Length: 141
Image (cartoon, rainbow, N blue to C red; front, side, top):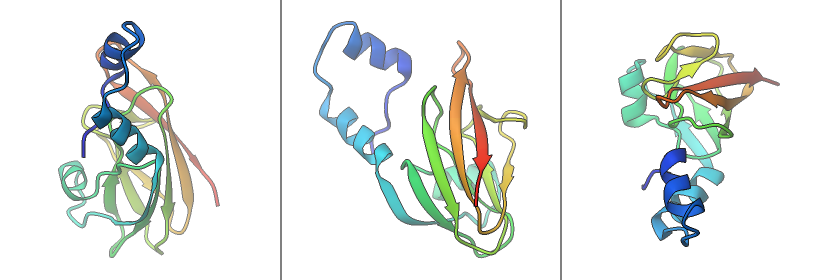
């Protein structure tokens, strides 16, 4: 799967020159806006394990876990990106940011827990000049 380009690349190649959107970008955007039926959280329970086998690539995802604290990883954040995670299991789900990113109020690369059987929306609301994105979690029912 092709990843969506960074905000800077997008503005340089698409907006400033008014070029047509490349096909692989259109496919990546469609994938990101789609939902996945289910994703099984990584039992490795590390950021590397989550990025390798349980990286979220859609805007909405239903996650199942086999154990307490199994993990998933958010995609690379940019301002405006939103991901909804439905934790379908009776276990706490660990959510890692993409490498270098932050889920407030944690530090960079730190896991944030999502309560068992709860839904949460993760919104990326800021990004530094170095590309470090900060996600905020709104947990619901």
